Length: 148
Image 1 (cartoon, rainbow, N blue to C red):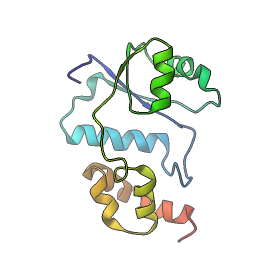
Image 2: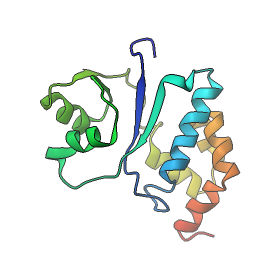
Image 3: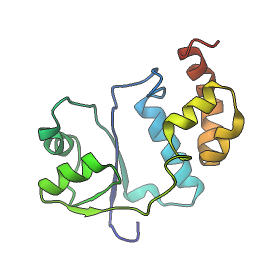
Image 4: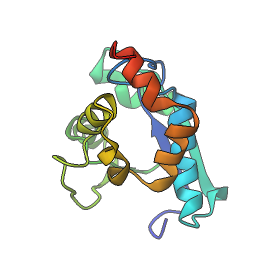
């Protein structure tokens, strides 16, 4: 927020939910991010949450995103494909600092949840773990995996 006047947070794969790789709805993912930002005293008045469904044509992904979003000049991402596509479309790119992707990895965190290993709670913000328990998202994931 120190580098931009407004922030658009894109929620990708918005059409996906209740699967092993995307157990939460776009709305639930927005709620997790919103609660985390609020819990860190981030002013939400200049932040937009935009759910965007996937398409199967990477060459038009940038234009697809633009059709769902207000105007923007800068992309913040660590996803190599997203960075490549927006760089080719001549957008300014900002990569956030790296983090340990072996530990802070959604597949790993979901596996811990499926295994009913509460260590996953240490790998997400408190607001997220509280919300997942509130909506029984961990139980949902175990059910999707055929374990409950």
